[in-house]
Image: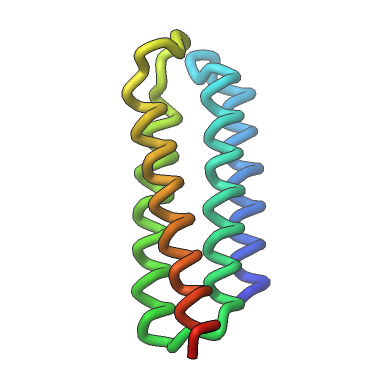
Length: 113
C-alpha cells in the first residue's frame, strides 16, 4: 500500500509535467504549483498511512486528504498569473493548513494514548 501511494504520486507528477510541457495554454507556474501540490498530498497521505492510528480513522482521514488534495490541485491549476489579491491561492493555502492540522492531530492523538 505504501509503495502504491508513492508510485501513483510519482506517476501523477510525471503526467502533469508532460501535460504542462505539451499544452501551450497550461502555464509553467500553474503546472509547477500542481506538481508541488501533488507532492505535498502524497507526502501527507503517506505520513497518515505510516501512522499508528486506528484503521477506521485512517481510512476516513485518507479519503478527506485525497478530496482536499484534489480541490487544492484544481485551485492552483486555475490561478491567474497575477498573485496580488488572488483568492485561489488563499484557498489553496487554507486547505493545506487544514490538511496539516488533521495529520498533526492524528499524530498527537496516537502519542497521547
